[in-house]
Image (cartoon, rainbow over all chains, first blue to last red; front, side, top):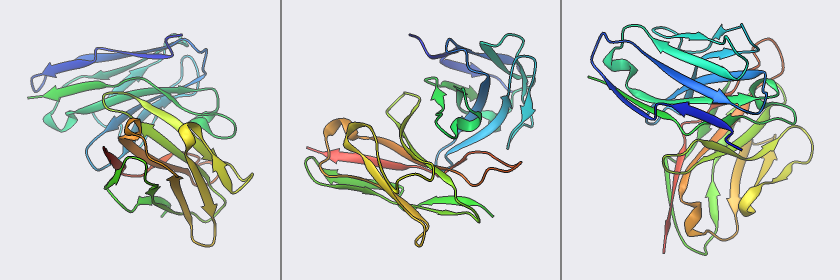
Length: 116
Length: 115
C-alpha cells in the first residue's frame, strides 16, 4: 500500500525556471493539500483541494499554482522560481477535511527544492 | 489570534528516561488537538489526537497526551524513551469548527535520545 507518493524527491532550479511537483494517493481521499516546511516555522498550507476539479488557496499561495484533474493526483507548479521558494514541500491527503473528527492527514515523504 | 506554541525547540533525554514535550494553544472554543511525528527524511505521521472525548489520549508507540483546558495545554509524554523516538514532533490544532476550520502547526520540537 503506497499511500501518498511525491515526485521528484529532490530538485535544484535556477531563479526564473519552472517546475511541477506531483502528488499521487491511492486511498481514494477527497481532500489533498500542499504544505511547505521551513526551519522553525512548522508547516504552512499553500493550496488545497476538496475534490476532483477543485482547488483553494491556503496560507501562503503566492507564486504557486495547483491542479486536481484526477482525484488521485494533486500537482503543485512553480511558474517562475525564486530563492524564497527553497523549502521542503509535503503533500498530504485525508478523508475528512484537515483530518478532523475521526480522520487524520497522511503525508508523503517530501520533496526538497533548492532555488539558486 | 488562534495559535499553538511548542515551548521547547529541542529536548534531549537519555534512553529509558521519561519524555515531556510541551504544547500550549490559544483558542476561543474547544479545539481538536493532534501530535504528529516526523522521522528524518520522512513525512509526518499521526501519533494521537484529542477531539473532545477523554482528556487523556493514548497514541502509538507508548505516547500519551493530556488535554487541560484550564491550562490550555496538550503536553506529550512517554514513560521511557527509546532510541527510535528520536524525531521531530509537531503539536497541531484545529481551533474550532466554523468557516475558518483549518490546521495550525506548532514550530516543532526536536527530540534527541542519548544512549
